[in-house]
Amino acid sequence: MEGLKGRTLVIPTDYRTPYRPSVQRVGGGNTTPYPSRRPALPHHTELIGTIAAGLTVAFILGALAWRLRLPLIVGYLAAGIMVGPFTPGYVADQGVATQLAEIGVILLMFGVGLHFSIGDLLSVRRLALPGAIGQVLFATLLGVALSRLWGWGLAEGIVLGLALSVASTVVLLRALNGSNELETPQGRVAVGWLVVEDLITVLALVLLPALAGFVGTSQATSATGWELAWDVTVTLAKVGAFIVLMLVAGTRAVPWVLARVATTGSRELFILAVLAISLGVSFIAAELFDVSFALGAFLAGLVVNASPLSHRAGEEALPLREAFSVLFFVSVGMLIDPQILWERAAELGGVLAIVLVAKAAVAIALVRALGGDLSIGLTVAAGLSQVGEFSFILVEGAFALGIFPDTGRDLVLGAALVSITLNPLLFALARRVRGRVTTQAAVPARPVPLGADH
Image 1 (cartoon, rainbow, N blue to C red):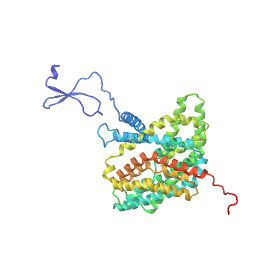
Image 2 (image 1 turned 60 degrees about the horizontal axis):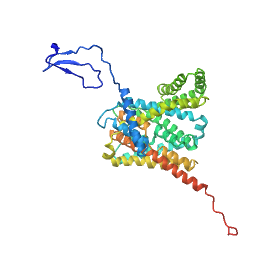
Image 3 (image 1 turned 60 degrees about the vertical axis):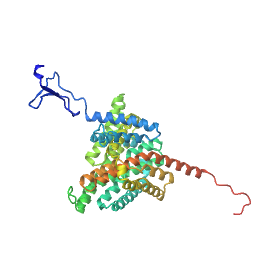
Image 4 (image 1 turned 135 degrees about the vertical axis):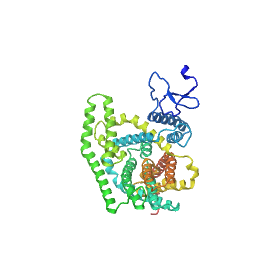
């Protein structure tokens, strides 16, 4: 110990740095390493920390929300705010949380595809295809009009409208599963509507650089009309090629693979096969065909649905699907600055009016105009009156290109917090109104007394 007299032990303050103590002379001087009998091992990674903190805080606040008879989603979003960068204490890694949430979206959309069939999807095209296109156009126009009141430009208004027109996959599917409406006519229409919105989002992401070039931002180069048309054509061709590949080759290859794996009698191999199909197909769709992870996972579920083992595949993927969907809501909460709720209450109120009121009214009107009954319109209106993951992708892409302000991103995230929180209540209201309408329709007409004048 004689060699350590006059020295002070220095310990790294960054918790992410492996512990490697050193000694330093008092008053400065050279630093010499402290002798260690074994190399220091890192006991913390961002991945483990994010999963542990996210799930633990989500469990605590989710249980509290259940105790207070609030939607569990409220607890999950609050957990994200607590582990996010806008509140004191531990801050989880946002990049890791976003990737974990993406896995949740993939597994959830894969499960939806398992309960869907090609016939179900085609049967709702009369309502879902024109309805989704009409709603997106109307919400985009409202976003442009609202942004003009704030003094924004045309490009900012288009991005705002598109972001508000797109609903969250996870929120809609959790609501439909919770009310046992996923396999009902109104549930099929809502999911088909969502698939069309996903395709529109893919096109919107392709058009963002062209829009940035049109308004002349420094982050993008201008594009001619021919270049824009070529980009759209190539994107549509890739999406079409992927859909044909999955429906023609996938419906033959995937069921055959599952059947061969099932003959081994190994539950582990079967679970691995299901995860490999869902995640692998989604990755290939994004990397080779520029299709979103959600759409790729949905089509993967469709082809697995052609297998007699589809029910078993859904059961095996259920635990992971639920856990990662919780992480999705935590990741959304991490993006939200709670101060936006009162600092920009007026602007946020205008955005919420589009999401909660205008979108719902337009959805009901479009469903009725296209020949659907009121129960379908109410379910679609409630399910799509929120914003989620695709909205964040659009906003982040536009922000990176310089065609969307930081304020707009905060407003979209604030609208996501409020609309996702209120969505279970909107579903409950829709079910109550639908029940009353059904009851009134079932009451027989009062009989006319004999001898009455006609």
